[in-house]
Amino acid sequence: MDKALNPKLPATYGLTQFGILHAEETRQLHTPVLSQWARASLRTFQEVWIDFTVDGNANRTAYLYFNFYNGAMSSEQCSLLINAMSHILEQDTPHNPLRTASDDSAGESWMNINRIDDVVSILLHEFPRRGILTVAAVRGNAAAGGVALAAACDFVIAGSNVVLNPAYRAVGLSGSEYHTLSYYGRCGDTGARHLLRSMTPMSPLQAQAIALVEFVFPSGPDLEDNIRFHVAMLTSNPDVRRGYWKSNVDLSPASLARTRAQELSEMSKDFWSARSVRYHNRRHDFVRKVKSDQTPLRFATHRRLLHGVQYDEEELDSFDDVGYYEALARRRAADALRHEIRKELGSLVAKRAEATDVMARAHRRGSVALQSQQATAHVALPGIERKTETVFSCYYQPIDAPLTPPESPFRDRRTPVLST
Image 1 (spheres, helix red, strand yellow):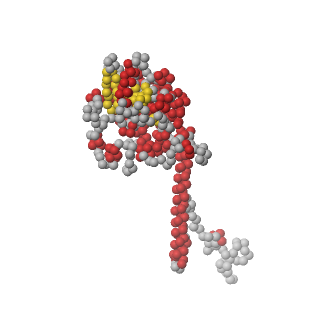
Image 2 (tube, one colour):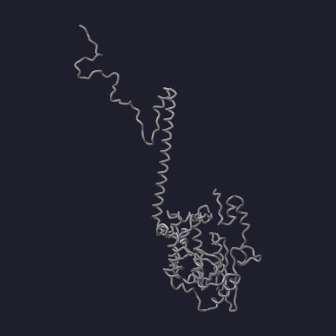
Image 3 (cartoon, rainbow, N blue to C red):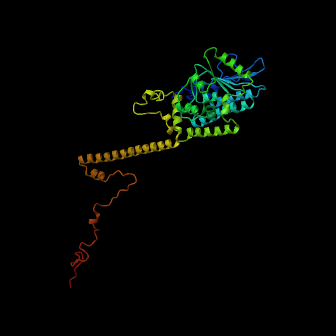
């Protein structure tokens, strides 16, 4: 078992991994979903809840809150969020959801991404199909999929102290959550590409300048009231039926299906192709809070020109090239093979040296018998058969061969002379 800590994961998960707690015990700690997904009266920790309100014009609004550890959602938590959304869809009157902030890592990541896509699909298809306006309220920091999830709503409200980082590349992912629709629809082609390749955080005001966020309110104790007041204004305006950015992209079911397939096609390479090393290494370091060797050059710009123009690995086009990682894997495999061959040859040389040393010691002791035995000892190299014939055997003949050449005028000395 891997005994390293997982500080980015819930404590109950780590305690269960190490056998300190049992899974049954941790399940008892979960707050059960209350009737109608209401907020718990004891104000205890609660991951998901819904607050329904009705204004003076009988407009009903559903405020959907979710508060997941570290802002990341597991597949189970995505299912919980989908169930809450389904509960909203089952109600009779329109409403607006308001959101706030495994051993097989590849398999779990794949299921997780698909489940998050299911959540965003409801925002982009199911709610609009029923004439439901969606507003995202970001009250805490958001990155990658968290930003894309908010961007899929009709409107985005952000607190002024929030930090946004829309890029996926820094964690070795190409990205999903239909970001290729929402980012490009909101920010245009150039703006979306900059978001995804720059990998630098931005303030809500910077995000508002490129239309990633529509409204920014001061953070603090009044943020909640300001959000609710502005949502009420949006829902009471008959001219506001959907986000303005949606007119820039095709959000038909066919387009959504095509976009999802294209994004997941790239994501599958992040999980299982030779390129997956970029994600799995970064995922490990992120979960374990492994300290980086150095500050990325996109932040430490003063170091870019120290030894010529330098770039972070994530800034290069090769970062997306599966062929590059395949070639890199072949080079590493060849280096590993050469290392093993050197190691094996070193072992053989050591054995030969040891045998030679034994022979030398035997000679010094005057042990002729031992010396004779050691003289014939050898260390056979792999795949080489050692010949054991007599040295210069061409000069020797069997004992029964004639001692004179066959055409000699002299008789064979072994031929008997008969006297008459």
